[in-house]
Image 1 (cartoon, rainbow, N blue to C red):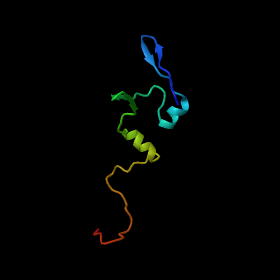
Image 2 (image 1 turned 120 degrees about the vertical axis):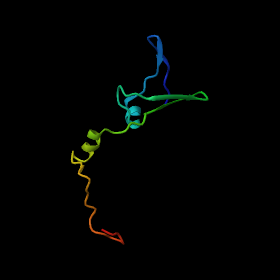
Image 3 (image 1 turned 180 degrees about the horizontal axis):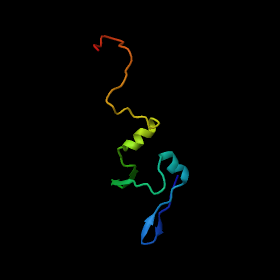
Image 4 (image 1 turned 90 degrees about the vertical axis):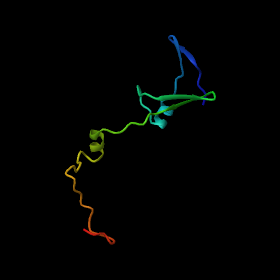
Length: 80
């Protein structure tokens, strides 16, 4: 695939098709890290830790925060 650099106000820009962004997991208005090395421009999604609310949503909002968890019966030489 090729893209053309165009003027965008006082800057320049490149438009990417939706399919390219979707396959990279990038949404509209999302910030990207830009690096340049030896003439190669790289765009990457910055790493971001999930909030407690985001983590809870992955478990249907049921986080066991009381400090205890039932791991089941011993299967080896564990001492309970």
